[in-house]
Length: 256
Image (cartoon, rainbow, N blue to C red; front, side, top):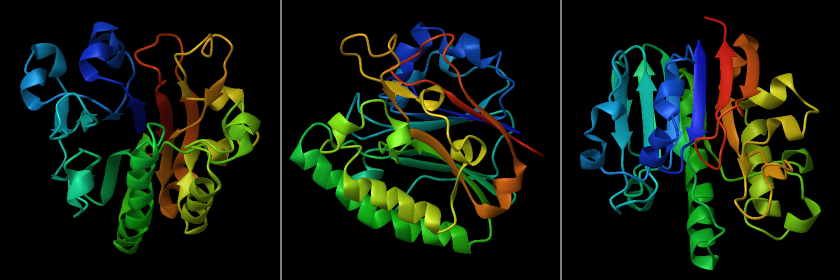
């Protein structure tokens, strides 16, 4: 089973950069997208509905903002798109697809980089979401949470960690939150296989300067899995041959 996650920074923009042509070459079973920045009416064109793929969008109420989506080769049995928190449900932050006992989730955490108001929203999400994680863990389901978590967990997860210690995405309380999530039993698929890798795992680069070519990046896109899936993680990679956004696709293969 191959699962891909990508913050596409606008699905219409990614489509123009060849995302859907690439999708057909991936052998993916499930693809989770974040920051689709589109309403359903914006996605009526056939390019957004490729043959052989089931799809579901959870758009933000605000036009051109946030939103998540899931494409899959096999149609899910069910979807869940609510966390029971209007602040985040209205921003299209969560979409869960279910097949039997398996859940695959596309998640887009708020970014706090735009200023104190957005950081406060992010902090409210960090306070809210652990209870939902506990519910998922208690459900007995096998779960893969794909997404842009907007947190670089450790110093290995961004190039310029010394200069970002006071910046959103690498704040101490955010990193502690991620540590607590992993201590609760969730498994970081990429770190499980590549405990010491640094630059090879970066998934986001600023558009400023020459960050991408210099690989001055951050690892903020993860696939976290429930404990039963840990032994089924076979390989992880970051696709960089073509660029569809300021993020790169994270690809994880799992044993069936």
